[in-house]
Amino acid sequence: MEILRQLRWQDILDIFLVTIIVYRVLLIIKGTKAAQMLIGLGVLLLAFLFSGYTGLYTVDWLIQSLWAQMVLAIVILFQPEIRKALAQMGKARFLSSLTPAEELRSLEEIVRASVALANRKIGALMVIERETSLKDFIEIGVQLDAKIAKELLLSIFHPTSPVHDGAVVISGNRIIAAGCFLPLTLSAELSKSLGTRHRAGIGLTEETDAVAIIVSEETGTIAISTGGNIRKNVDMGALREFLTEIFVSPKDKKDEK
Image (cartoon, rainbow, N blue to C red; front, top):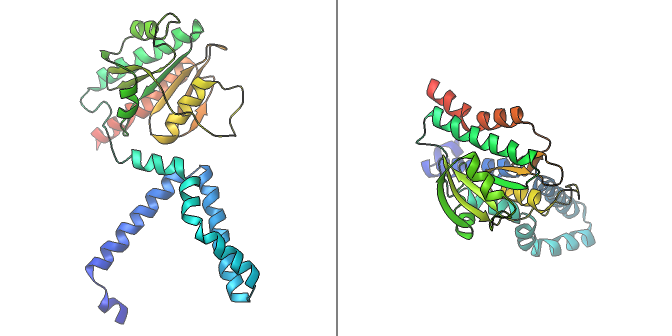
């Protein structure tokens, strides 16, 4: 009871803010290698406490020496997650001013273009902006600000186009930029059969919440990447359903409420 009497409103606010921060950090690292690294750090902390309690002085000295470099190690180990967290501080609403009909039309153009590119075995990488702004990547490419159209996407990724090797960035119902260069994933777990285009799509979704659509010029197949994961061999129906669920369904549910 004495503790409760000494509790200030600032203390309650402090605990609440720390809880939110820890929760957000756990959401960011969930399902990533960082989660396993965090468990490893926890084991190291337990070993440190155990060695001090039991009098294992050599082990205790060794772990204390490691702690001195721990801050630098954490920055290096969690570099992708730190970049992702900082990127999420700048947010941009996707399709916020569009009606459901406009959203569906834009998404349908993307689906039709993806299938047409796959059928012709023309490589392509399209990224759709969600909450996290892709401004840094847009500035690197050729800015277009054009309405989404299947024919335009086909012309951009045609092998004779000067910007066909880069990525197209889409926001709302506009193609914002083409020929954009994206960060490559450094994951060692990916198949070596995946080329630069696939690794760039995955690399972007590791750092942002964007959706990447990758068309392979070797196999003529479509893949989707979100959250650093990749789903290969996606057909037209699955692609349409996936995009609709992400970009249209959440808004419909919100409107119903």
